[in-house]
Image 1 (cartoon, rainbow, N blue to C red):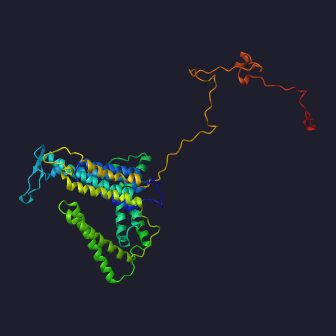
Image 2 (cartoon, rainbow, N blue to C red; image 1 turned 30 degrees about the vertical axis):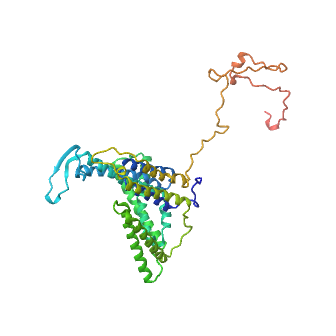
Length: 439
């Protein structure tokens, strides 16, 4: 199971990334412990950092993290100004309260702000922020075009709409980064409200151009064409698909709720079976073909299985020890890190070791200077007088006549003052003169 480099033949199935991310999101929905939520964000961030590519959608994870911080801030602001359903006795400060009529009982604007209410809002906002981080990890790792190609034929039209909606945020982030870089290169400010307003119009123009190009491409590829099937098959497909999806929703709610865990799993399995049957029948209406469909291999099973294992173990921990996953707010208590739920969250790190490594460009090696560009070694006379290692003196050979240097005056004479060698005139042959050269 040595991790290979990602290529067209062994790239991971896009559905595996989404199953892994949805498993982490399910685990985040079962707890309000800030330590476990922070651990889930760290696991998702590490997998994204080591397994994302250089594609435009891969840089959207940071935007989802910032959006999660905004959600936490909004949740805290609502808790301060609109109150909290949690009663508290530790008053932090008091705001002027706006009187409301009798029919608005239970709603207040302003008033007393307690520490218990603020902490409850913080835990709730952290849960929402963690859910956004998990979905952002799926957007950064899964190729939306390959995910669309892997959908069943009955969901192709719906899948196109979903993929276009999912790629809106990554493309928007890529456009904003590109325009900010262009403004920075032109010496214009790229931060602040003014620069954001100036960037907004080109981003909107690019989104409209992209939508027109997408519509033309969909029309050229025959989007919406269906084959003729009998009416009975069409009605059966509709009943099975809608009924199965409703069963999936009811079973999922039963698993996530604290009271419906008993009937949630059977309803979920029955809904999945009915939905798969409807999708199989609905696929007969699709007339499109697939070119080199993505294979669901061993690594895809490991990646998706790690997310499902994290969700299942967290659901089990929520039923066995609810106080560890939901720290007490009234009275306030310091949250503790439960050991085996934390170990279950760490199973989500498995994709960082089994998924194919992305092919990222390596930094260019430093260029070696050519012999002509190599710096010349200074002569002993030009070398600085620095202490160096001791060198054994060279012993001349007595059989070789030593070279006698010129006198000191000759050595100090500059090169341009030296007299050139004059050859003997008798030794130089003279060419015969012509008549026209005679003076």
